Amino acid sequence: MRERIQWDDGAAHHIRTRSQRYPDGIDIEPAWTREAVNDPDRIVDEPDPQSAHANSVRLVGYSPSAEMVITVVALRDPQGVLHGASAWRTTGKPRRQYWEGRSDD
Image (cartoon, rainbow, N blue to C red; front, side, top):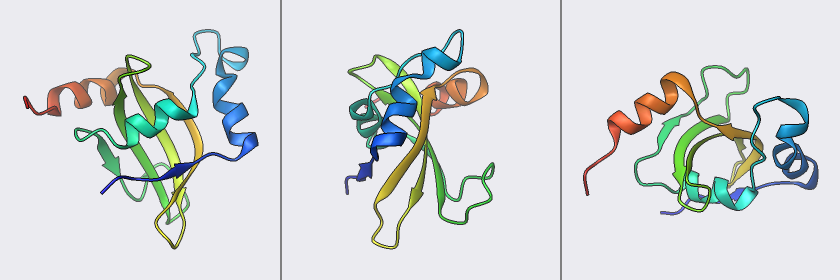
């Protein structure tokens, strides 16, 4: 089953302009997050242990278009649709965990 993720205009602008706020930030396109959340090798934390929201989700997956691993933070609505809150290029331990956990298919 494919995950659906939606980005409202403000959240999409937020991820598209990361480089304006962070010196090493990479601007993220919402389409890349769709690829990452539907990566069969993605890592899913639901609920996100770093969030106060019970319906929070943190996903780490690969975007072929972006050619990088992306972390996506979203809230899941009652219909199961993800609403994007933030996204960034994955680094450090989560990136290592992603590459170590990949299947060889």
